[in-house]
Amino acid sequence: MPTRPLSPHLSVYKFKYTMVTSILNRFAGAALSAGLLLLVYWLSAVAGGERSQVRAGRILSLPVVKLIYLGLIIAFSYHLIAGVRHLIWDTGRGLERNQARRSAWVVAAASLALALVIVYCAWFGAAHPR
Amino acid sequence: MSLRSPLGQVLGRGSAKQGVHHWWVQRLSSVALVPLSIWFLVSLLSLPSLDHGVVSAWMAQTSSALLLILFVLTAAWHSQLGLQVIVDDYVHGIGARTLTLVAIAFAHVLLASAGVFAVLKVALRGGQ
Image 1 (spheres, rainbow over the protein chains, first blue to last red):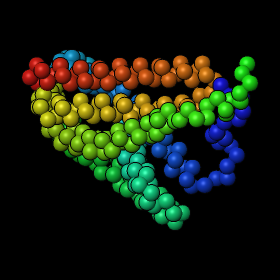
Image 2: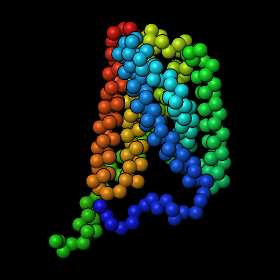
Image 3: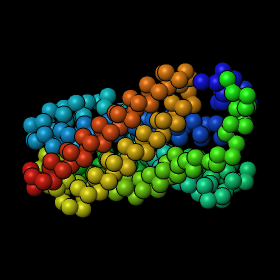
Image 4: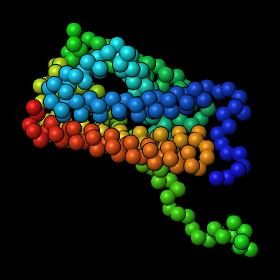
């Protein structure tokens, strides 16, 4: 372990919008890792048979868990679209300052729109228990 | 103690050829997750209900079982790679970092296996 200072030095930078888009992508990714835990829990409950799924369903339909779904939907939408932006950057395109600033707004708007569509479909869709 | 400088000791050995491996598999898994995650969400939202019969009949179809397994495996892989970078950045101290990385790796292998096993269990009993 080197004793010299290592990056990142989060506190030494002047604030830039790129910090927000970057750290949000990381937060969203970390949140989705927790979502993976929920997904595997649900899949295992389904595999355990009808009674086990009903039992897990009582936990998975708690209001606080529904709030988690909302967070996961927002995280998914942002991580998906910001991730596509990264993939486009990886081809060497869109890295100019004005292009990157514009695509940051596109990512914000598109991920918000996608999240709203998913929430709408989940709430009013056929699978929603009314 | 060698008389050769640390730089001199490593010069001329060539690269380990793994410099971009993490970067590359992170992109590879993300490219795969774009269609897989959209497929998962659309399929889940278009199920008539989330009752046991409906869900297990869906999970037992060959195409959905296969795609679900791919989704769980790829998501776990991508998640492990992503969390690893966060730990690399923010967990200082070789001991704590190594321990965290091992725990993350084990947890993801466990999650991926449990997910695949669950899908196979439903699919191989014919969706009951």
